[in-house]
Length: 500
Image (cartoon, rainbow, N blue to C red; front, side, top):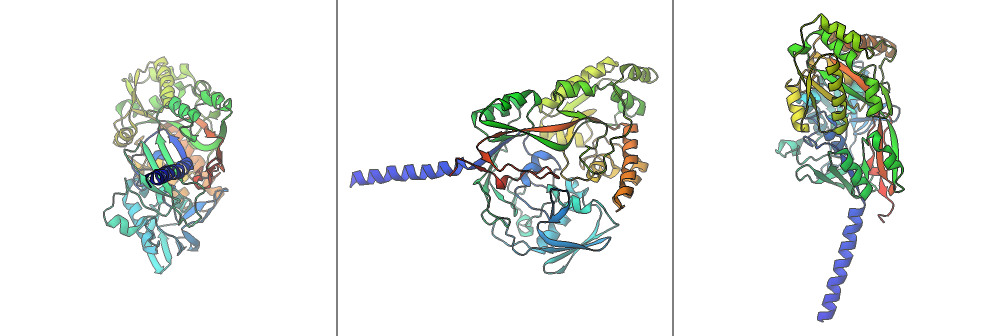
């Protein structure tokens, strides 16, 4: 009897461990460079958060690959007038706790977004939200808004469970949505484990779940991919492209992006209030040197803050070329510029950009220091205007220019809502508002060209480089896919070929 009992114990151990191994092996492990500040999508409009929460929640509408808004939580939608949109809500969508999504959840979520600085900017056109029938929601706008539907597709516009939130659950640590994955373990935020949601209304994911590992160093992320510790890494440094390409177990994908590397000048600082000083700084920046030395010419020089893959971007505008002599001549007629602080996150690519900029500024007589700031602190302190200069990347999840210009340049967005240059210009505000309410695409393009002309003349933000994203992926991963308009990833379609 004892022998039989021992055999059963061994059998159970092997069986359950094999099952566990299979389940763990069919988790897709993704490395990203920064820890999310929170898992509440309405709170922070930043990629480390939204790149994760987009798989926990859904939005009313989504973008197809051509950038056209299409139904998601809404079964359909129609314009009753230029300012009234009627959404019919699907009645077969389950939250992760098993409850059915209702119009009350949709209305509550939209109203909550309007209360949060991070999400308010994309919904500020809303005048009223009401339920007309059990499965219909009517949104009334203050005036016609061309980008409104596209804004509703952003991950920050996530639909939540009203009851779950009002019960006091901590959304930042324990989010609960309708998406393809549920959060199993947040821990300290360095490793976020998410299990597949079997009742997902678009179909059961093809893997058991996702693990997001936070690995801040580029070289460490690459090493984790090479050893098989992770399956997918983003933002592969161009200098490391060949390492991935030469590894027979890995694939290197080149992903066209809507990304622009930006240098943000805090115009509230005495040294940077002067428009001529900002112009001299722009002319001092060696963008070609940055593109060559750091990105190995994988990308292109940015002539506008708006990536050319975004509707409304103007790429035929005159821009300030690198010219140290002209920059010095401008500064000769201005007060001496006190030493500046260049803030950057721990991303080493951005630190390297900061080092080139520091050398460029020194060549025109401006001393500067580089401060590497932890991501959470970086977000908080820059929203308070502590910085002189900050380096960042603008990643756009829709193919419409409004989200960029309204967030980065409109005076109503100063601070936490996104305008960290603290730039305010009534004429620019008027043009941005006019472009939002103009439905005709050709007329919008004219206005956006004028908007970019003002930005490039005033230089509150200096565009640096349009990036091409390098993605390292283990060859065991099948069905890697992303939306060509929003650049979002479809992890639910991915699987490992040896996971069965």
